[in-house]
Each structure stands twice: as C-alpha cells, then as structure tokens.
Length: 167
View 1 (tube, helix red, strand yellow):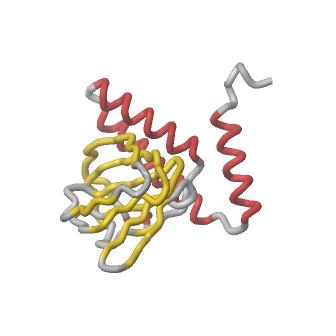
View 2: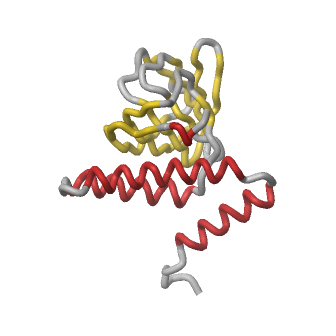
C-alpha cells in the first residue's frame, strides 16, 4: 500500500470503539474506508481468506466497499477514523504504527473540530487526517528497532513537553 497516493475525499466520523474478546461480526460492503488504531488488544480482519491482525503496533486500513469478517482476539479499545478516500485499493492492509500520542492527539482534535461545527472545521479535520497519514508514512521509513524506539520516545517527549506535572 502506497499511502502517499491516498487522497481524502470526505471525512465521515471519528469513533472510540471498544471490542470485547471473542466478539465477531461480518461486514458486507463497508460504506466508508476506515483507519483503525487499536490502543490495546488485538483484532483480526479476514477478507477472502486473507487475515490481517491489528494491534497497537499495527493499525489497519479497510477500503470502502470491503466485505470482511472481524474478530476480537483480545479486548481492544480502538480509535477509528471513517472517511471516503481515493487510491486505497480494495484489500485490507496492515500499516506501520505512528506513536500512540499522535493518534490520540489527532483523534481529540478531530472530535473537537467536528463538534464545534465551525466553518474551518473541515479544513482542520483534513489537516489532522493528513498529519496522521504522514506519521504512518514516517513510521514505515523507520529501519531498525532502535530507530523505532527513538521515534516513539521523541514523540512522547514532544507530546509531554509542556506538561507541568513532569519534573
């Protein structure tokens, strides 16, 4: 999957989802594409006999129109971004995981912008979504475990830079 070729056409929703272990559902012709970032737990998505496991270290992109089986392997809390995109292909694919703080910040910012219903909300939401995609692309370029660890540490430090409770 080449995320650099994806173009966001429209934002539908951002949802915090909790899936209980062993819960399974069939989805037929998904109405939107979805970026799913498990914050914990594990989910399995099976499309045409091919399975992809989603976890905190491996989010997934589900294309619009996909039919698949979704099974929760371990109770999972996820952040799901539903959108219409071009260039996503037709297969569920695993993605590199951006730092958790990036996903959390994008989710909070998008939810706040959507709730505010300001004229600039669509632009703010698109900026956050493209920022999230950019973070995935940067995570894909990480070469070694040490570089991945450093990238996560740097993101956490940046996220907490102004936190007065840290000493």
